[in-house]
Length: 252
Image (cartoon, rainbow, N blue to C red):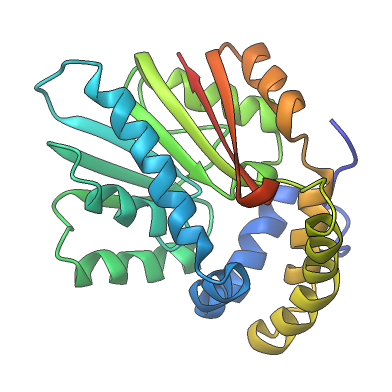
C-alpha cells in the first residue's frame, strides 16, 4: 500500500484523518480558487466526463424512482453541484466530508443555486458512514480517496452503502509517463504548486502534501486490484489529459 503520507509532522499522535480535516479547514477559504487555478480549469471537464459516464450507467438501470447519489469527500460541493447540472432525472445528492470548513463553503454554494431541497451536505468519515446498506444508487469521489486514512476500509464501506448494481466513480490524480508531459507535471506539482499554494493559502504543508500524496497513491491497475479486493466488479479505468488524472468505476 506504500508509505503513509500525512499533511503535517506534528503532533505525531494525530491520525491522518484528523490531519486531513485540519488541513482542509485551514485552506477552505482558498481551495476553490487554487483548485481551478492549478488545473487551468481542466478539473471542471474531468468532472463533467465522470458525470457523463455515471449518467450512462444510470440510464441502463431502468428505474423511475428517485436517484440518490452520495458524493464522498464532497469538500466545497463542486462534484455535487456538477451532478445537479447533469440533468439526471429525479436526482438527490448527499455530500459527505470530514472538514466542517469545506462543508460551510459548500452549503453556501448550494444555497446560491437554490438546491437545498435536493442537496444535503453532512460531516462524516468514509470508513464509518451513517447510512444503511443499499442506500445509494451510486457514489462519486473526486480527488479524495488518496486522503483516506484506510483506503480499503473506505472503499468497502462506500460499496456497502450502494444498492445492488450501483456504481462507484472515483476521479483521482495519476502520474503521466510520457515525455515531456511527465517532466512538466513533475515540475508543476513539486515546485510551482507548493510555492503558489503557500502564498495564497498560508498553509505551507497543504500544497506540499498534495504532490506527495499523489506520488504515494496506488494508481492504475494497482488501484483497480484494490477495488476488486473490496468486492467491486466490472472495474474500469479511463485516463484523462495524458494521464494527469484517471476515472475509475466499479459495480456492486
